[in-house]
Image 1 (cartoon, rainbow, N blue to C red):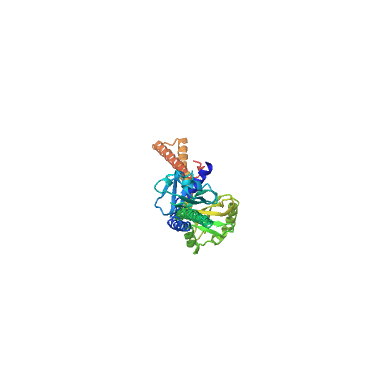
Image 2 (image 1 turned 90 degrees about the vertical axis):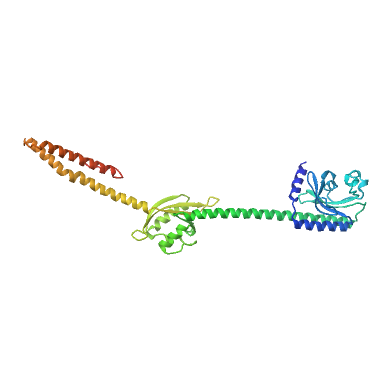
Length: 378
């Protein structure tokens, strides 16, 4: 049973034959019929229920029930199986193919045995008269059967290659589509991305990197260029240091000012990320840079504003409160000397109110200053 299951699997491989192969098989069965002097010749394949005629001369029937097939016996042989008179053989004399309308009398078949040892079916000839085959005819049937099998295996190989080719084309199309999407995403990024090899050679880059190099250096970025030619001289030492850290397998990030004091002055946040192959070996470094110029300028503006607020707070705390303190001192002296002044209480209240307002302004200034509370003596 195990062998039969494997045989049926092998048969299924050859059930679908291309038109050109069928044409070639029909020529072979025609030659077999001519050599053996029989009106019928067939190429058969036997599955679990049917005997299929894949090429035929002398009949228009496509198949028969397997239980009726003379070829059931042939596939159990290793050589040509000949039955001179089917009516005299107890295995076939009561077969409907012998007693019925066909009235077959003679049968000879050569098994179609694959290289794996599975008998798929036969190349057979049938006559309505008892007959015999000469040794030459038997050998011819044997040789033709091998050619039938060769053609069928060639057909399967071509179909397999075609299927593989189609799958490859589908995979290529899918990969191409995926790469197109990745490239679209890669090139649409405002950040610059450059892949650099171990020898500091540029391996790949995105559109933003190309535009940045062209705008900054008036050069066209090309694969194979040394990344050092696009690195500011004052940053070469630091760049080499961080590049080697990434080559050692560790990612690192830093911020730096590029081309200070020039029209191309800018700030970049650059990540040095090791790139590994499937075996885990670092083959290069991905340089991913984000322009942080706007953020840095904003931070500088905040710093300048903070310094201004600090100066205002100091002025408020010391310059404005000094005359108020003087007025309060004078009023204390007037009180000690009992100087009678009708508006003294109102003046004192007003000066104290002014002092509280100044203190409030100083505190509000301190609260708005980023980076910590100022220690201003109020």
